[in-house]
Image 1: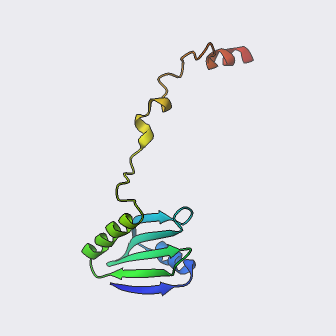
Image 2 (image 1 turned 180 degrees about the vertical axis):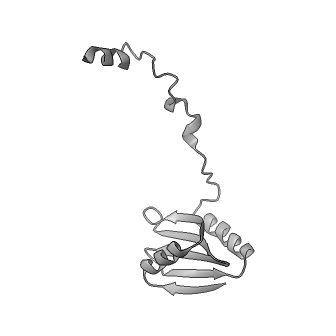
Image 3 (image 1 turned 120 degrees about the vertical axis):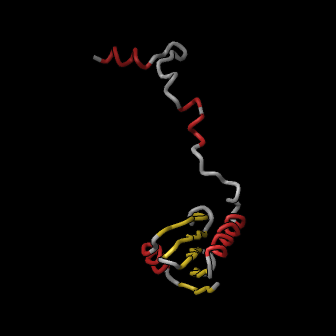
Length: 117
């Protein structure tokens, strides 16, 4: 693994734009004050590390195994290892339309629509 310190986020953004594939984005600059973008450029595996407090850097990994090992380590650092990006609201009954015609405490939206014109 090699690491190169970078001063400008614009440099990191330019490399991110050139990436053939963004594998994982861990963290958020708004909430965590740091963010890692794991990406591939051709056969190279890179981590682009953005930070508001520490040095920014680019990490180049020797192989895919080392690359995915560091993704796991970064997730562990930021507490995202147990996060599952499922749609949590898909099963929530409060967000479906099956009760859309129900009368709630004597008020029905359809009655209001009929009275307008």
